[in-house]
Every structure is written in C-alpha cells, then in structure tokens.
Length: 365
Image 1 (spheres, one colour):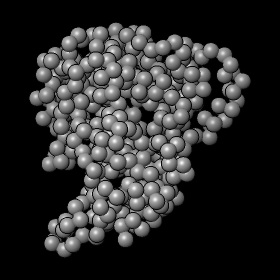
Image 2 (spheres, helix red, strand yellow):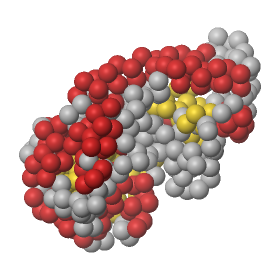
Image 3 (cartoon, one colour):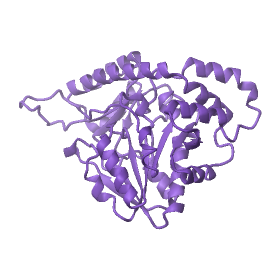
Image 4 (tube, one colour):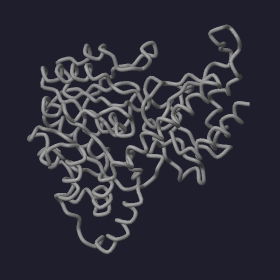
C-alpha cells in the first residue's frame, strides 16, 4: 500500500459501496444543495478573500470570536499551514504524533521539514492515548498533534489528559494541534472552551465529515493567539476558499438539527455494526465516531470459554472478498503501528449498513 493512501478512492473501484471514507450518513443537507444552485451565477466572480460570511458562520457555530477563525480549503490546508507555521516559530524543533493516527499529519510535517517523533499507542491500553504521552513531550518538541476522536481508532481523549498535555506543552513553548474534524458526529463535546485558557492550542476542523462535503474543500483553524492566527492567514494562498465552498459552508453551519439527527443515527448504527462484527469474532475498538476499527482474529483463535470462534476470513483476503460483493473498506496496514489484520469501516445509513452486513456475512460464511 502507498504510505499516505487514504480512503474514498472510488474512482479506481467504480460503483462500489464506499465504506472506506467516513462522512455524515445523512448526506449533503438539502439547504446546501439549494444554496449552491442559487449562487451558481456568482461563481464567475473572485471569492471574498476575507470569507466574511463564512467566518461569521463558523464563529457562531463554534461560539468563538471571529478573530480566532482562519478559514481554509479543508482540514488538510489548515494542517499544512500549521506545520509551516511551527517550522517558522520553532527552528530545529521536532513534532510529536501518535501512532496510529491520520497520516496527513506526517505528510504535512515532512513537507515543512519538521522531524517526527512517534508516541506509540498500545493494544494493552485499548489503543487509548494515556498519560504516557506526557513523557514524550520533551524540550525538543515544538508541535504536538492530537485528534479527538483519533483516526482510525475513533477513541476520544480524556479531558483531564488533554489539559495536562496543553499545560506541559505550554511549559516548553510548544503548540498543540488538536484535530476535531469528527467531534461533531460524536455525542461528546468539543474543546473550544480551552482556547481562551491555552493560547498554544490550535483546533483544526472541516465540514468534510460533519456535512458530507468532501468534494467541496472547506475547513478552518481556531486559535486565541493573535500571532498564530496572523501567521496561519499569511501562509495561505489568495482565494484559498472558493466561492462554492464559502456558500456551502455558510449555509451548512446553520444546520444544527441536521447534526443532532446524524449523531443519533450514527450511535444507533454503530452499535448495530459493532454487534455484527463481534458476532463474527472480530475485535472492535469501541470508538465514538462515525467509523469503526476492527481486527480480524487469527483463524486458530478461540473464544474466552475455549469454544471455537466463527471461522473468520483470512485477514489478507477480507478486503478483496468484500470488493467482489461491491463493498470497499479501509485497510489499515499503512497506519504506523498497525498491520494487515486491522480494518476500518464507515458507519453509514441503515439501508447501506444492511447491504454491508449482507456482504460481510456472505464473506464470513
């Protein structure tokens, strides 16, 4: 596999049911589609470089000051800018990332020329981030990447631990980049209230997941540090956020009820998919977002009472076998610290999940 391969490459596998990318199962809000159609005649005009309406919508949605908002062309743009900002602010500093985590952090860090240190998550700890990470935030670290929830595990951070990380990073004048792109699809609260207390915190978010807008690149960074906000703005290209992206984002962020409906659906369907996977002997990480990571057991593995488990498919064949039934899942072997037994699937609509379950049970039979 390619080192920085991501999910969602349906262009190679035409017509598949895509379980490799994790978007809101409700799809794009109708109000956003209608707004894009109404605004189409304005697409021949340069975008507002200040993203005035979008910034106001983000600030209201996140309950923060407009001066703390940096609109970007998706979360990847925000992450890339942040890495270059850290390189300028902390010459010769290193970055700390968890393993496994979203590979986009390392990709952006390499582009910015920042050496990488890894904090390895242990299966013995359930792949949770624990207080062990504090020992790895040494004086050489200038930037710490965390995700809440983490990708691919789906596990949220303990609040006390996050505050301890921020305090430790503050002691050594390091920034903490907190990726909360999936937080609004969980039933957990975000971390915006910490921005005022910790000027070294930068929260990265996108509308990609929450509003199923993967094809319209719109995201943002939040920081209470005026210096960091100015630096992040200066590192972006002119007109980085297109007019369609500004239009879609401004309207989507008003859809609070839509987000709540998605949270309820995801919680319900996540529990259903978890039960199916576990019934077939899979070890499922108890994530809290709109995706599930699971491990295919060794075929010789037995249940805790000594009885044989349902015969699991060979881990190296699960991806191909599901593809033959028209389902694309995410292999996790290119995540640092994982191997070919690990997979991740999206939590989609009830109808889509019915199709996934049918295909999965055929493969496991």
